[in-house]
Length: 239
Ligand SMILES: N[C@@H](CCC(=O)N[C@@H](CS)C(=O)NCC(=O)O)C(=O)O
Image (cartoon, rainbow, N blue to C red; front, side):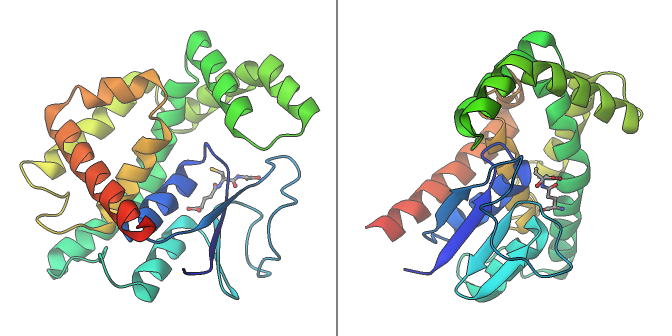
């Protein structure tokens, strides 16, 4: 078994990107849930690294930033490549990963925390899945929805958007158009674009927006294909 440890927050979309990558490559890894307040579980980081998750430790290598981690994994473990052979598809897959980081991952929280009901549900999921101490856990349950609702409003303002649902719908229109009738987003081969979008969507799988997205047949078929592939790769390393 490879010596791989992922330092993460359970509800961090960038961490979900990395988990998608590890699992699609059939790599076993240990996940360490980092306390978002203290971040004391983080390993010692290179001086240029922000104190953010995800961080991947492979033996004595420390890699930070989800994009760098996926590139590292693809180089270190070339099987189940994330790099399409056709150069045009390769360029597009990098653009789609970048779009996932800057657009899709920005839009999704605005519909997770957007209404009060959504924000309360998100605070409950956060408190249940995250590594807060007891007191912080109670305060997240009590005050988290208020903070999350404010965060959603701030993100919308920063991106010049009024309506989170319309924003997410436009991201999914775009993704659907890229996908067309192809098996993967850049054609017939898996790419880092698929890995990134699958990761970002698994992060919201517990929230109503996920069902809304899955009402789009092309996206649902692609998502199912990716999930089956991911499960099969995980099962293969487990056996
Ligand atoms: N560009 C980074 C972004 C990572 C990031 O923003 N992580 C957030 C969690 S989703 C974080 O650790 N935030 C903690 C903080 O800013 O203090 C990546 O792709 O990994």
